[in-house]
Every structure is written in structure tokens, then in C-alpha cells.
Image 1 (cartoon, rainbow, N blue to C red):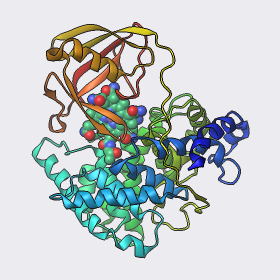
Image 2 (tube, helix red, strand yellow):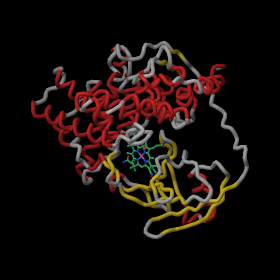
Image 3 (cartoon, rainbow, N blue to C red):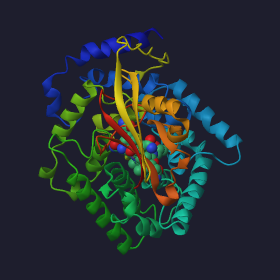
Image 4 (tube, protein in one colour):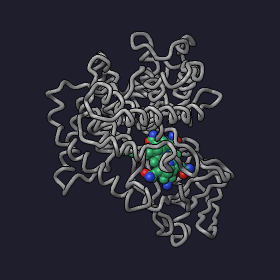
Length: 432
Ligand code: CBY
């Protein structure tokens, strides 16, 4: 318990001391450096209000991969799964269930994984429901291709049934589900590369039967997705944006034979990521969980590879929430807020300095309930806006409420994006 209060301070102190030679290898070495980089991330992952219930799966998976045990988190997740099973059918999305399977099965011996075998059967059904939805709704899954990739990955790693023909039909890199508004989604592509690599390995080692043609397709898809991922590499080394980089690193590390090693400077990417960690960019547990494995050279493909899992040298149990510092400055700022459907609905609101997008939406709603009313759901990335003026986002139609500032899409959600004085904010009814 006492540890929890020390973590932020120790993390902060050590952080300012990160030596520059950290950037000379493409992995932070566990013996020498892990505490320097990882403490702030661990603190975020374990102490956040978002590491609750099913959202703990992503965190647990990453912790296990790097060899950290957290029994309290494990108990919490198992409890959540049991409660969910009590309800009629599992109330989880396919990708959430896949993450639960990956998390509970990660780095365990085979006896322990047997306990969760029935979950794999449920995932098979959920994966089929995704496919069925695509057939009936113009190729749109119930959720996203990010989740379908997680499904294939979990089914592949934990010996579930899936059809190679379906994988080959749906995972063509030109499929619209790899794109949002015409932009290639690095997160989605990276997860698909991990899934396809697992499938490829299963074919090669004879675990699953497939024709030579199937294997050729999988190779071609992987190669093309890897190209698209590398195409999104920025000058500073990030791939896509700061939040997709961790998973892109995992994808590139399992697919090194599909690109020329001069095409990606892993050390540069790692170095920029370390800087971003010190700037606090990974303050959401989902963000921390998605970057952590790559820092240790681990990938989700290592979950059932006992040797590759972390050595388990840490054993922590810290569950004191970090007290949120009250906003010391009580100054106020004014921002412009627009809801755009076909028409524009505009207001100017005054909020406390340091407020996030969600505060602006709440304030606008107080001003005019009819025009600015909205609903949101909690996700592992924080609140996700589901409706404005009663108009609901719908995956079957690829519609959603897009967040913008000065006309440009934001790369953070309503709960994290801190607004500035005089800023022009917008929620826009969009298709992806
Ligand atoms: N998780 C999922 O299925 C999510 C997959 C994901 C590709 C995800 C990003 C990547 C990840 N690493 O987790 C994703 N987002 C998807 C699929 C979507 C679509 C959701 C609907 C669907 N079909 O499932 C959609 C509608 C295209 C979408 N994301 C919208 C948004 C905006 C949300 C606005 C709102 N209504 O609240 C927003 C804010 C973009 C915008 N400007 O409007 C957005 N996403 C962002 C910024 C993000 C990043 C979050 C970063 C952060 N710090 O908050 C993201 C990591 C993520 C979550 N989206 Co989407 C991408 C990134 O920037 N790298 C499955 C589950 C089991 O884990």
C-alpha cells in the first residue's frame, strides 16, 4: 500500500534521469532501465479509474507479458467475466472477449488455461456474428476490424475454430474496414498483421490445414499491410500517431522479413516514445497498456510462449487511487462550440482553465438542452460520445460523432482533450 504513494514521485525523479543511451537499443532492458521508464506507466495502468471491470483485460495482458503479477486485478477480471456469464449470454463485444481470453491465458501453464476453454467457444460464436453482420450490412462488422483481428488472434493462439477461407475473404488490405474516412488505421492494420502472422505460423507448423494458395494470400496480405503501416511512419519515428505506435512496433517486430531493415529505424521510434512517456502522453491506462509490451520487445504473439513471457521478477499490488490534484488556478476561459449535422448549432461557453472537451459539452447542454443534449458511454479510452441531439452513432451505417478543433480531427477523446482559450471546437455528424 505504502508503495503506491511513492510511485509517482519515484517515477518522476527517476524519469528526469533517463540516460540518452536508452535509445541505442530497441528495447528497454529489464535489468537496467525498466524502472525508469515503466514506473509512470504502471502507476497509470494500475491506479486509474478506467482499469475497472472488463477494461482491466488490456492492462492485465500487458502486465503478464512483461512478467508482472497483479492478483487483485486478476481476481477483479475473473469476477467480471463470471458476472457477465450470469447474464443471458456474454454481454461483451467480440474484441473485449478476445482480450479477456488473451489476458487470462497469457503466460499461464496449460492447466490454468483449461479453465477458460469455454470462453474460446463463446468467442467462436461472436466472431461468426461479426461475419454475419458484414453479410447483412454492406460489409460492416458489429464492431470494428481492430476487434475482428483480436478475435482471430485469440482463436488462433488458444486453438479455437476459425476458417482460413473467411480470414482470406475478409482480411484483404483493400477492405474498407482498414480505413476511417479514407485514412489507413495503423492500429487496425497492426492488429491484423499480428493475427495473420499467428495464422501463418499455425499453417506452417501444421496446427491448421490450408492450401498453398491460402498461405500465399496470407503472405501477400501481411506484406501489403506492413507496407501501409510503414507508409504512416512520421519523421520523428512515430507510426500513425503516438497511440498507434506501440502496436505498430509489435506488428513490425513479427514481420521483419516483409520489409527491408533500412525502412524502419526502431531505435528512433523507441526514443520518441520514451520522450512521449515523459511528457505524460500515456496517462490513460489503455494507452499505457498498448505501449508497454513493445518497450520490452514483447508482442501479443508471445502470450502462449512460456519462454518469451517476462521473467516475473516484479510482484506488485498497488490499488490506491492517485488523488486528482484540484485545479489550483481558478481562472476561466471561453471557447466556441459547434454541433454540426447539416446545420450548424453554435454557442460560446465559459469553462474553468484546464477543462476537457466533455466539460464544454456539459456546459453547452446546460445552456440549451434541446440543441446540445448528448449521451456518452465509458470505454477503455474514456468517454465515447454516442449521441447528440438524440442522433445516435451506428456501426451498421458507419456513422459517428467526430471531434474536431479548428476544423481538424482530434487524436484524443472528450475525456482527455484539454481545451484552450478562444478555441473553436466542433462535434460533427460524420461517416467513417
Ligand atoms: N477497440 C476498438 O474497437 C477501437 C479500435 C480503434 C481502431 C482504436 C481507435 C484503436 C486502439 N488502439 O484501440 C478505433 N479507434 C475505432 C474502431 C473507432 C471507431 C469506433 C466505432 C467502431 N466501428 O468500433 C470510430 C467511430 C471510427 C472511432 N474510433 C472514433 C473515434 C473518435 C471518437 C469520438 C467520440 N464520438 O467520442 C476519436 C476521438 C477521433 C475523432 N477525432 O473524432 C477517436 N476515435 C480516437 C481519437 C481514437 C484514439 C484514442 C486516443 C486517445 N488518447 O484517446 C485511438 C487509440 C482509438 C481508440 N480512437 Co477511435 C486511435 C488512435 O489515435 N491511435 C476494441 C476494444 C476491445 O479495445
